[in-house]
Image: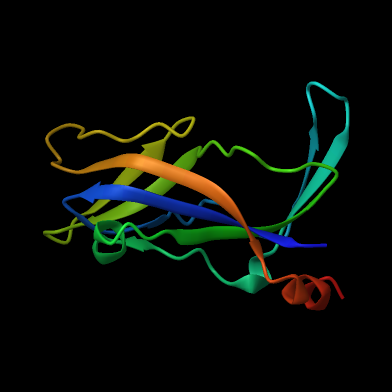
Amino acid sequence: MPIIALEFSAELVNIINLQLADDFDTTGQYVFLQCKDCETLGIIKILPELGNPAPLTAELSRDGKSVILAHFIIEGLKPNKFSLNGNFIATTEDNRKIAIPFNRGQDFEEAEGTGVAVRNMKLGFSIVDSSAASSSST
């Protein structure tokens, strides 16, 4: 069964580092989903043993590169869209820490004179080497 990586990229404004907040749960949990059109039941298992979520840095953002937020095994469904809901912590260019809430995958525009923004967010899925899938499921 292939392992799926959730990739994230964005344009960072006055931010040098953007990472998941500590309250974001990437433990090995199962999520059960049902296809709203076909009634098929699917299972998603988060695989924390494949590494912690990588922070998006200003350099990666400038280069248009993405980072991996999580790895999954998905049974019964094929992922096509992910909506980011949760908190990130941004480190600003002047070394302040600011909580960045994302709601339904919408960009974060400057709030309360902070001078920071996260724009043009892109979330996508990629298949990780299938040899890793067989070794992680044992």
